[in-house]
Image (cartoon, rainbow, N blue to C red; front, side, top):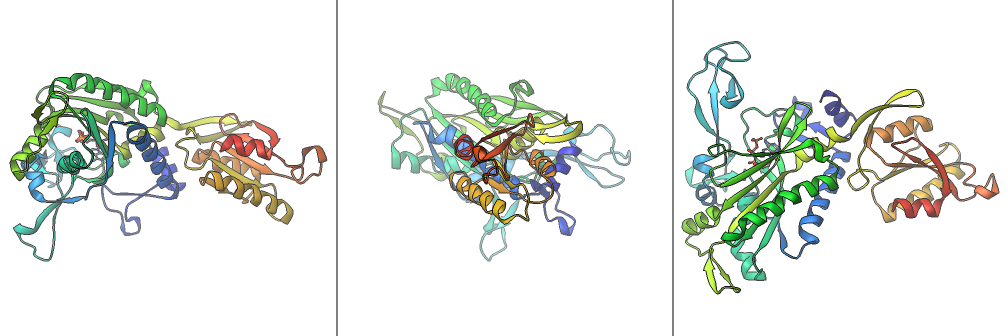
Length: 429
Ligand code: ATP
């Protein structure tokens, strides 16, 4: 874990939030490579679950919502974790994560009390109870309150789903384990609406879709385990939940959740808002409130599970090396282009030409002319770039038969081959 955190910081994937001020617990800033990685994952998800399907549509709802929505959903009264405070050192812990005694000083704990994890804020200039609102603790809320808008605009036939990617906020009692448990994080969520009797089949379908997504991203199936969450341990809205757990470096922990939320949310919002949220089923002529299956993907946990999966140490050319074995769909940089020497203008000009040609087709291309080629390879290995292209004197025609060829070096094997630039460009693009 330490190695991953340190590489993520050193190479510009993930920095501690507000670091120059000593940080802010539970916040993380994604650097230049982290944001590319994140965007690649979001795009894969969006493409797989929204754009490539006929039964899904997307949404980007506001983070701030009318507080009545969170009262109706049960979050104001029930979205809490059990908190204990040490009587001696006053430190606070999540009661379900500590033993009988304070792990810091061995002191006794006081009574367990429920701590609501929603961040409270005020909307508008008045700072009284009437202006209280919350930062959304899950993106799902925005989906439920837009159910009627989407049905009215598009008349989708059941079953259909609404997907959303966005920030969620939870005032976690004990943020920890890097981006695994943060106070500000990103979720990719789907509410998939079904006829009440058809929830079982949809649940099974989404169970398989979760694994299919992991495969596309590059999280190995063997590291992901399904846990059927028992009665009493499920969220207040759920009749069935499967947690998809991943073997993180700090233990087997929840990566994603899949829940059967029944008609709990739509019914609660209909009751609380006074707006009819039922659905008229053309097929049967019946009007009813659809039930819902919710696959919930944490984006930051995806990134951590992926980093843990692709972090590799091996030996190459008799020297130890570290590399990230990203597949090319998620790799933040798809290829790097080097001029063999940076003080030879004709080499630099040719390399620039190749670089621009590639960058026009795939923007995630990097230029590097710093230090010797071996060091440049190692730097690209460490950020998971699948290919490096080197422009040398042969490219310029020193050996006429090699004109307009370059070396293409493979990250995983370290092997280099000589190929025509056209061939290299079409292979990478
Ligand atoms: P946990 O039991 O680990 O607190 P949870 O069961 O409360 O998680 P859900 O409410 O099911 O989590 O949230 C859906 C998904 O959002 C989780 O599977 C996870 O990927 C992500 N997630 C939840 N809380 C956090 C957090 N504090 N930091 C990062 N991701 C989170």
